[in-house]
Length: 470
Image (cartoon, rainbow, N blue to C red):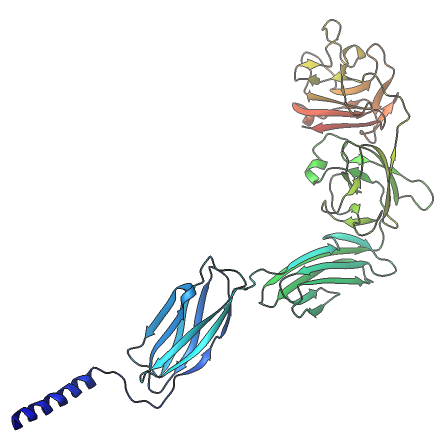
């Protein structure tokens, strides 16, 4: 019996030893600590989120658990080496189908070697602002030119929009300021600037939001003391290439006022608008929108803006028909006045001359009666096509080339009589776009114009001729 009792005691101690060997839990008197911890994160659906923390425990960090059932997230990081300091950085992706602006609280639990735990929560809000602020410059226009006056030469009107604006900054040689915006979603920057010295000034704008997104924009404004021009043109084209693609007629010439004090400042154009809301601009240089281009000031009725390229806002011609358009450089004003022509229209208009071929084959040297050759004569004039909406407007597609088997100049005259010389038009030798009734001079094509296709456009009311490349 005694032997059995000793054997039982031995087995009990052996069992205790075995249990002790299988239990990793140790007695500790410390609690895990979060020394640093990102408790709030702004993100978006589908974005990667990183949990970062510095964890310490003198007994050793055993594990870190991150668990959120809604996102099927259950991650335990085991540290077999039981470090007393552990720098955690764990990345995961927010589900793509999660709702934007929703809020999610995710617990992070750290456990030490004695199975003592500490828990903290990370709040993830899906409201991350990744869009930079929008800067809308209403005025001044980029590359605008303004005149030195009594003051307020440059007027700023700039709109900012963002979820939460933080700051707006203006930088230039003559204006510098920083405006705190404190989280507003919209802001209008309005300021008038008095510029005393002529010059070209560039203004750089920077808008920042609360999350650090940044947008930049800039405008350049030229300030000049006086503008006076020897000529002014009106155009409905929108780029420099279009201004020089024709033989002549584009842009349209205007009439300069000869009144005292108005010479060089006041110009009048007569224009046929083929469509409602036609867009036109004034330019004082014939082949370019630079360095000066006049358009409408959208912030002030019947006022002009002076820019330096085709981006200046156009003057809008509201309807279809003829308009008188007057501009005054002195106060940057303009007027648009519709009118109805009182002159009589012609039943037919013809082009005659040498080297002009209709449909590439029929020459203005071919007599209409018998097919014989007779250049520069009404007997061989070829009819233009009348516009269906305007009885004064005539067009014809032609090819300009040298006349075979004939010597002479390649040129043209316009007339309205297939059996006589009157009425006829030749062009003004100083401005070939002006048709002179019963006068002017014969126009002769440059050799560089030969073997190319053009459209003749003739307005008998405006006495304007355009030969446009096509």
